[in-house]
Length: 239
Ligand code: URA
Image (cartoon, rainbow, N blue to C red; front, side):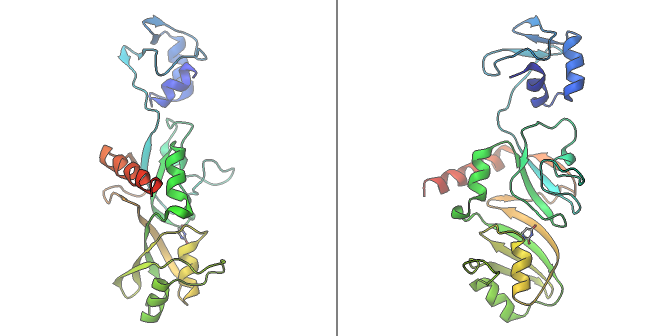
């Protein structure tokens, strides 16, 4: 990998900033100053120091973002602000959001460069739980609740898988589903004769939105959170 990319992935600054610092002799590879940003290094074998500090390379990184409304769940977009724009300039170039939340949906979004984990979490066969807080246009009738719990026709080949519904108040519920069809929650509520007016994802598998994380903010996952989702994913793989 190129030296400037390596340093960028270590979150030490923007690519252009780091190129200048490399040229200024601030970076050593195995003890010798290297002034070429394009120099190739082996991140597993070479000892890279930046301003005298040894750089530790993390191959896989995981972030929790509290997605606000108004940004799109994409890596890039010509017109709209994306969830990756919220991570700022110092973000690694290989990051992507795990699945999509609609532009107006808020809440938990996992951002990573771990393609294998993303596949596990998104695969329809794996039935990973996704829990949403939904605010509704009208009070949820008992009959609507029962239909959501049994599975509804949203125009796909099969009915949706049974959902778990908890009432918060007459027009607020939490809905837990194990699929991830396009606009699924909104389509399910529409199918039973109600409408979603606000939607927020609270949880994906064992990973719950940190309630201390305000909208638009992000943080690295803790070691326990990473272990939790990787462990679940391993468990599903062996099932
Ligand atoms: N279901 C929806 O309808 N929208 C989302 O953003 C997520 C799930």
